[in-house]
Image 1 (spheres, rainbow, N blue to C red):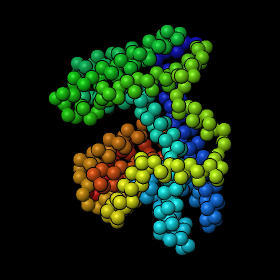
Image 2: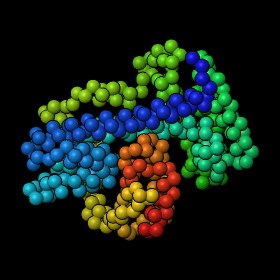
Image 3: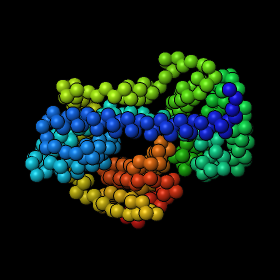
Image 4: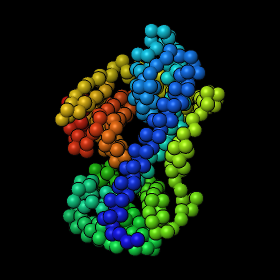
Amino acid sequence: MRMNGQQLKERLERDIGFEANRARMLAEDSASAEISTYWRGKKLPEIDNTSISNLAKASLIAGLAGRQKVLDILQKLLAPTSKESNIHEIATEITALVLDHQSIINLSRHRASCVNAHLNLLEYDSTLLQIYSTILQDTEIKKVQKISTELTLRTIGSIKDLDKWITDVHLLLSQISDDSRTESNERARKGLISRKAISTYRNQWELFVHEKIYPNFGQSINEKEVNPLSLKLDNLEKGVARSWSTIMNDISEVKTTSEFQKRIASTVSSKTVIYQDLGTYDFEITGRPLKIQISNSGITKLQVNQFTKAMKAQFLSYDGKSTFNVASQINGHVITVAMQNAKKSDLPQIENMLLTLL
């Protein structure tokens, strides 16, 4: 097998996009099946599959925003027959139930971020220039362009060639993110990968390319090289959902962990402070609905800027088809964004809308 760097880049882009979509769909399907089992076991009022699916999608959203969406759905489904305390308990148990599935989506996003950070370097005229033009000097930009072009034109015809290409792509990312350039450049420090994280980026990058491309060169994958995410997705694809008794045992076990108790305590204590002061705004961008929730007081321009960076980072693993959900709690205040079929060009408009709401 022979291919050049550009063909390899395009293949890896398809693979990481497919994997992100697979992770989301399998996590949602598995969470839906287990929430359905939980719902019947609790003998709660009968609901349709759409409501179950909506609960699953909401519960897989991390943090305060996800728990609030679950509570909102449960309020509509159960408020006529259940006490407020019971609804909060059900929300807590559903949150505990989907914790493993939520971790799969988080693993997928992290892996996609690490891989895309490398692939972005091979698209000089768009992503590379957009990301690093404010960080690199003109002379450095020219050097990066030369290296990027060589990497896309390079012929890969063997495992040895592939390993060299993997190393060289990472070396370019490592050089750009060198800490020395951040000493007098605050703006640069916010846009670069830290020295502490760069080794993780390398490991994720190498494992992904090995897993996806090695078999094409007749090279088998060592069990130690298989990413835990791939193993988890394979297990979910088998479709073996937990039973009612296993679900309740697992929920009980998760609820006793200190990490989960801290998470729930923070959402409960924050609810009266934050969500009573939360404004909801519905917009449209070229006919596509956009929902923004933002604390009505206390949000600053700096916090919007921080949220925007998180939004751009999350977009790297977005499949472009499902709902693009981003949520953040910053200094006790909440910002959430939800948009169907979001595009990269929408992000600056969303940022401007957030700024107008301050």
